[in-house]
Image (cartoon, rainbow, N blue to C red; front, side, top):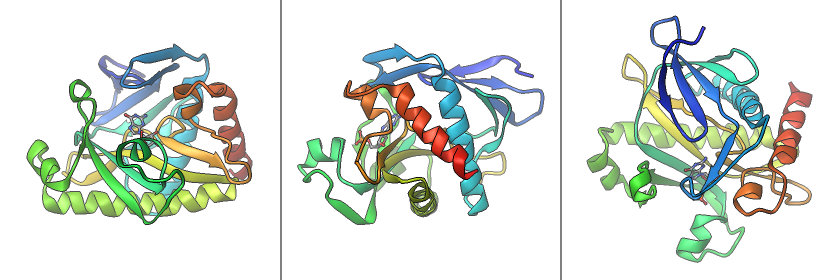
Length: 236
Ligand code: 5GP
C-alpha cells in the first residue's frame, strides 16, 4: 500500500510504503528530453519502463550487483530499498554517439574498449554538466573509495547487460546509472535502467529502440519500447 508522496521527478513518483526503509516507485507515462524542454505523455510508457527495469535489476542481482530493487508490485510500480542518492549521473559508453560526438568530435560509432565512464553532476539548474573525479569529490559527499566502487559497479553492469542484451539481439551502446547509499551506508545501484536511460540498437539493423526516437522525433516510442519488452519476455 502506497503512503504519502515523498518526491516527484520527471519520470517517476516516489511514495513511502507501509514498511520502514522501503519505498514505492511509480513509473509515469511522461517522456521528457533536453532537461524537460520537450515533453509528451505516452499511455503505457510507465508500464514498459517498470517491467523492463525490473527484469534488468533481476539480472544484475543474479550477477551480484547490489541495487535498491526489491520486487515489481504491479504493472507500473516497484518496491525499492530507501536510498540516499549521490547526485551523480554515471554514464558508460561502448560506442560513441550522442553528447560525446557533439562535445568532443568523436566519429559516430567509435568503439570504446575499455568502456568509457563519465560523471555528470545531477543538477537541473546547471543542465547536468560533465565533471571529473575531483569535481565529484568537491560537489558531493562521496569519498574516493566510493567513487572507485561506483566505477567498478558501472563496468560490471555494462558487462552483465551488454551480454544479456546480445541474447535478445540488442546492442547496448551507452547508459546512465545512479547510485546511492542504503541505511547501513553501502553503495548500491538505484533509479531505473530502461530505454529511457540506455541507448539500445538492434544488432542487425542499428534501429534505435530507445528514447532517442522521441528525443530526435524519428519513431514511435511505444512501438520500440514494446519491442524491447517483448524480446525480454521471450527469454524470461
Ligand atoms: P548522452 O550524454 O550521449 O546524451 O547520453 C548518454 C547515455 O546516458 C544515453 O543512454 C542517455 O539515455 C543516458 N542519459 C544521460 N543523461 C540522462 C538523463 O538526464 N536522463 C536520462 N533518462 N538518461 C540520460
